[in-house]
Image 1 (spheres, helix red, strand yellow):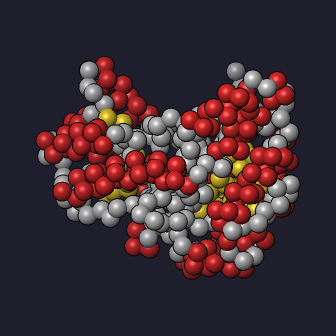
Image 2 (tube, rainbow, N blue to C red):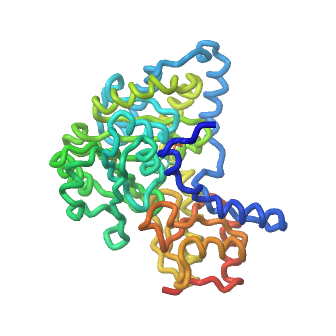
Image 3 (cartoon, protein in one colour):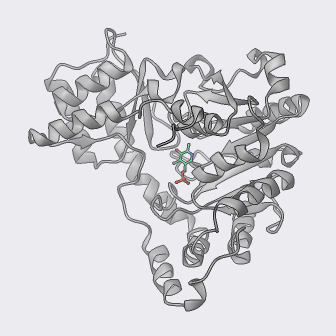
Length: 391
Ligand SMILES: *Cc1c(COP(=O)(O)O)cnc(C)c1O
């Protein structure tokens, strides 16, 4: 067998390998595992979307190759959704492309823009695809630290000018995985001006825009005047409609970037099953109260978990968006040793922050993907084992 590529060898050991091993061992011992690890909704896809799929799959016209860029009505549904949700006007032909889940688009964009060694600005902590996609495309990730003291927003003025000049793409993601931080329109206004100064493409990842609480409404970067000159935005039906397994998302915004991404995709995939796009059209017309109802489930879990951890010494504020709680590990631990301890002593899976970049060290991420009863059980186990937060 030939050797794998140098790029391939850059792939770090799987983030969750150690946790998975310990989890498997715990299950073998008969431990009742509470899984607050992965960011995958535990509820089924909304039933009106499943029904639309049933209907579409019986129609033979959905069975052949779809258009690469997405069927016209899906792209129109995306444009209509952006108009009603954000007040952003998009040309469904030139400014919208369908994605087989936003992850592939986030990764494939890089093939269109990077020559070997080109710099990509990658938030730390951040969704691992930004960094790994860059490395697998032959580019060089440059970490932009997200600090709690700055609300986990990048400090644009601290980014060295020579790096900003050389960089091609900057990934930003608000509401944020893993920190649950949110960005307001003022931040995006500043970011757009900054990106224009340095001739950068902003790649905004808006996967969590609909998963919000307490009346918070997440903006799109495209609401900023002139943002389309320099921004592409990724969106996904995965989180908002409990559709992670369906693999459907979209990229919108700057025409050239949409065309470039589409060209790469034309050469590596053949689009999304048309029946899934039909279901996607229905998903995008889901009445707001139904999304709100789904969010109330997470809100209740958030309240129970936040109050419970705060009784154990943490001082967390309730999150405004996403389904993640990002918390510091107690004194005496690093991210990995704390997550191992919680798994071994309590049978609870949480994720070490260090897996999301160097600035994630010292934190762990809890996903609100189990019921209130199970979250209460998890809190009880922590208490019984004397696990508390000590600064
Ligand atoms: C879940 C998630 C996505 C969406 O992934 P899909 O491929 O659309 O399922 C994108 N970005 C972030 C930050 C995520 O957490």
